Length: 471
Image (tube, rainbow, N blue to C red; front, top):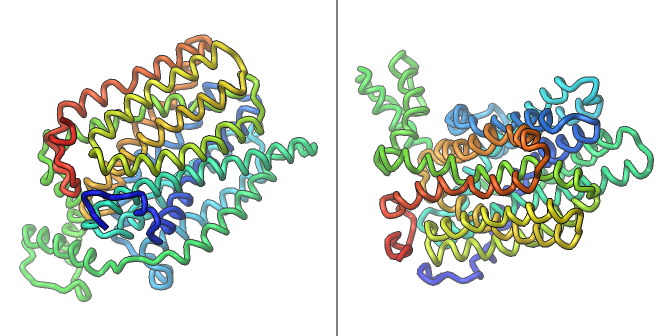
């Protein structure tokens, strides 16, 4: 394929089907701890502030880089040999999520709120852990020199994530609505059983995804470990298979596992630009997260049913997201990822104003559909540009750790700060229109940071010269 002039045919690659599945597996848990938990608490009479604070469980996505180096290096006995390093971690996380859902089927939020949230936290930890290895497995499906496919893979990963989140969410909402209509008081607990069946089905398909050999990665990691060990005074040359675990070797393992990925990132970009990149990653999607955390509460308070939300926000939103994510991946490669980030960031912010209009007009299904479509178009472009951006930044020696670090920093802004979204709405006395205006303004700081570093980043895999892309 012509790398300088890629076409949409790049999406026909069979590797994209694997990436689509991985994205869906990554996005699906968010309907459990996001959509399901939010509506479960809302319909059991809990306040907006309580729901907002319950969303703090998403904060684990912001700190999963703490254990990402361990996921990158530790091999799970038996499972790794049978399934592969990456898939073994995914299967372990999915098994714990299934057990957690079984516990949820036995609980009532009004009587056991603390336990419900605690189980939700376990699900979030498992989801954040599997995301570490899912992202690595997805990136490793495509060689770094296949630049057009890297951008296309990022787009397909986003499509997969939204497929798991939106289509999975639509199925869940329709099922919950049906059980409620049939008169079952425990309709959410019954819905969790259906979710468990879907999880088992996705894991069966996961078996079909091949893993790239990890021999080169393990050798590079071990070489870095030996370099640190030598600096600590260990003069003996050792092989990976017969390493003797002395104090210097243990310290070297810890140092190369945790410090190596960080030094690699800052060595590539420099300390000032590296710090600015992390600032941009932290700030970029905070406004979207504030809106997203309260969107379901907003829809319910405006008078829309679970079926309405399933049709307009999930099903219609999924179609829009898929189409414009694929176009966004193509656009990010053709125009340059930096230009794509600027355009998508502005669009993502401005489209929040559509929800202000919906708040002022009232429960208009036509305006609801339009707001969802416009917002999903902007979100699709923003997400695929963002995923492409951080995918181009990672060192393949530390794929899981560096991607997890960047994704965690982005998630920290979206989860910890957005947990106060419910309190913000309460402080505004339920003025949803003003709330969405504030979320519109939240993207400005990130775009200011991006403007100052736009020509100074080392995106070694970017085929478009950044300065020319922005001219």
